[in-house]
Image (cartoon, rainbow, N blue to C red; front, side):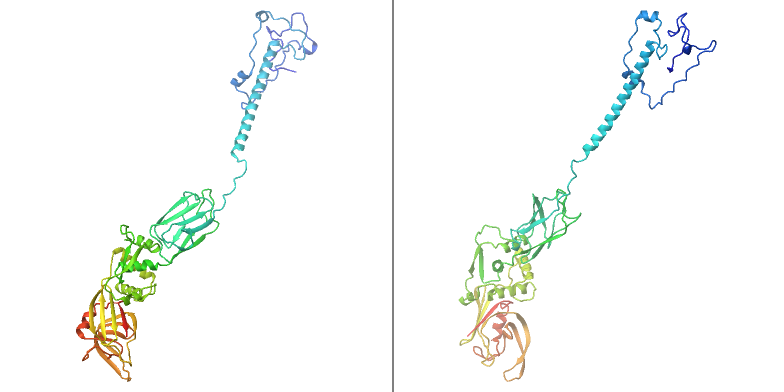
Amino acid sequence: MRIPGWRRGTAGSGDTAASGDSAPAADTAPAGDPSPEPAAATEPAAADAPTAAAATAAAPAAVPLPAAAAASPTPPPARSGLGSLSRFKVAGLAAAVLGVLAVGGIAASTLGGQRAAGRTTADASQPAHPASPAAPLSVVSVTQGGATTGTDGADPVQVMLSTPLAATSPMPIVRPHVAGTWKQTGHTLTFTPATPFQPNTAVRVRFPAGQDGLRSAAGGLLASPVVDHLRTKSWSNLRLKQLLAQLGYLPLKWTAQDASAPQPDNMATELAAVYAPPAGSFSWRHGYPKILTSFWGGPSSLIMEGAIRAFQADEGQTMTGVVTWSLWQHLLKAAAKGHTNPHGYTYAVASKGSPETLTVWHNGKVVMHTLANTGIPAAPTVDGTFPVYLRYQYQIMKGTNPDGSKYADPVWWVAYFNGGDAVHYFPRGSYGFEQSLGCVELPWTQAHQVWPYLSYGSLVTVTG
């Protein structure tokens, strides 16, 4: 075995054999033939060599030899298989080997620690259990004032969800569209309309689904679109009467219970009052005959029909006397703007007593009392109460006489109230008894004076 870096027989070497001491034959070189140099040790690759700093740190500290031993080296004892290698060099070599092993151990430990740390970090970044998908969002209920039908259109719409929405989630879509605001409190969404929904209206609340739909705070979505329906109350007959009285289309006055309370004066407050009419009372205007009070009653009363016709005529609508959505639209606007009846309230009574007369009241005062003619027994004027529905200043009135002959008579100041029966001027030699074919005939002057009062919707009572 050869130790790299050891050369036998070098002069002055501490490993040189003592004088007279012969080496064993196996270790003796032939005379004049120097011992061949051992093969140079191959240097380890740079990547595998420990750094100088690491080797220095890992190698044990060198122990200095005693001075006497350094000055007078003693012959070595009988050599073992390591030859004549000095103890110093052996110690140095052992230290170097130990250094290499120590550095290798440190490197291995470091690399091993890094690999372990890497695994620990990677493992720590993974959840202990895979995250569960967010629960789907669902709509629990949609109500308005706690109801789904017969609702108050001025009340907020409340939506109960299975879980709160994310702050960035879109809101449900409400139709018909009205201005308003959404607010979320826990699981509840509240839509407060700035203007109430119209009465007798189907309100739809739509909830979009999918990625562009509603999203819960946990990320849950609606599985499919949802549409819920509400229906508001019908129009308030009480509020209709209040409005017509306020606007002067009734022979009654309406007074609010709290005179200091603000009265509806715009569309929003007017609609709110339709759902919750303010408290108050009606009172008859003075001057009208008692018979008129018998026509006041429910929603189809004659007084209400006449008032509705009068308002429809003033608003340019078809006179039907029937409550419609269009009527309410116009009525609420007129009330909000304070547009009162431009004609006042008129009531007329044609009496078939002897003598026959026509009496007209306007705004509680008698404006006309005159002799009049009604229908002959073959074509009588029908008793009853009817609203004026057609007016002409002049026309050619045509018809059939009781004997079957035809007539075409010029007439003026015409106000139809029941079929072909009308109040108008017709020239007669005298008045106060049965002469017409069903109409109420007046002298020229009186017919001219009364015609402006008998506006559309004015009630005419024929009594025997």
